[in-house]
Length: 140
Ligand code: 5GP
Ligand code: ZN
Image 1 (spheres, rainbow, N blue to C red):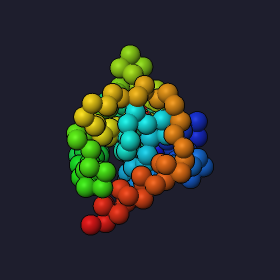
Image 2: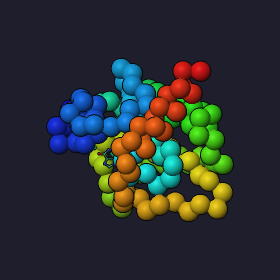
Image 3: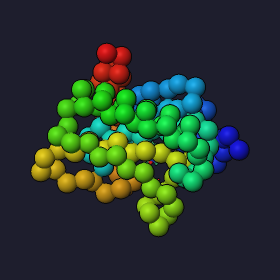
């Protein structure tokens, strides 16, 4: 299966669901997390529906980590967090709540605790403003 109509991330890929999209190419997409744990929290996904790290091959893994690297650099340049956490959960026991593999890029700020995982929706206009800033950095 390359797309699952019941999957929220497949719906973002197809355009059926909205998202603040930072980056989009033939195989991957990056967008702002709708319930960010910190300012600038972004997600990187393969466009193809794959549930976990056990469902991707070496080429797809390499492609995804390269996108993680590129978006991380753009977040650092544009948002200037004190640190940046990369996280990827497989299975509910590990905290996975969306069954389409994704990498979290979570900026960290000195003295600021993370908000709870997948808990509070951010304002769309705030996510759009962060998306715009990161996109500018991606083009540089
Ligand atoms: P997981 O727990 O599966 O690693 O993370 C899923 C992430 O997706 C969470 O951080 C959650 O806030 C985010 N998320 C869930 N639904 C949506 C959505 O519809 N749009 C966006 N942009 N993010 C979502
Ligand atoms: Zn999917």
